[in-house]
Length: 249
Image 1: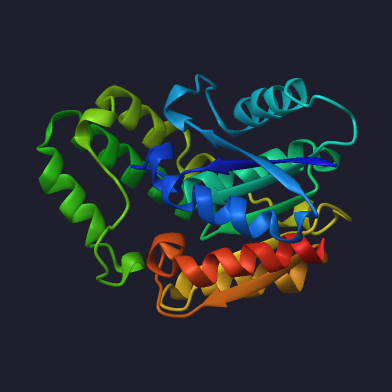
Image 2: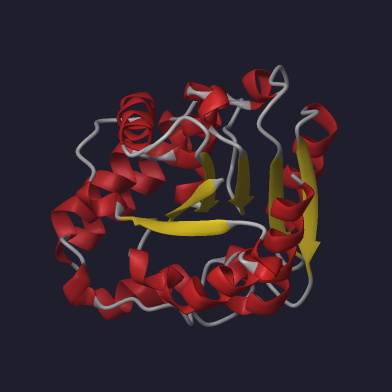
């Protein structure tokens, strides 16, 4: 059986962040020649959809269109913003996916006032990225508590970004515009999903526990020596957990 693994990066990232895993994932996932995987790095900055639901519909059509034969399995890995988008793709077409790896992603806020506050904050970030010095902004971004003081080690070159698109992503894909997906996820019988959080990311650890309790298809794994940027802060254990999950499915 042929398998395809789709990678979705986070905000202020590009597909290049996954490059360091390319050989690792291929080697791990081909272990024992049981399966062969094709890796597909999605560039979220090239997307033109105007929100979560249009994006999910458009992306699932793309995935289906590239499915060369009916028994090809589709897997998805999404980090942070990419994880939120991956959850929408799963809800959009659960039968399309063989399995999913979601890393540090919020399934959605429930309080309307909190959503409005989050949207205002994200819109302010977006406007600042239109005009303020890049290095100052990324330094401030990295100082947020969710990163637990850990430096960014993933590639992030200003020349790889269009500032207008950055501002647009902050607005259109703010968690303030996102519906709470837990009620829908709790009713799914497939695909199997593993939610991964860093041990130093208390918010996502709490989310993972909540998802595992509410959703029968979701299991939660906590990776030590990592905060929000789990794959790049503990890549060996992250890769091993992904391999074990895929082999279990």
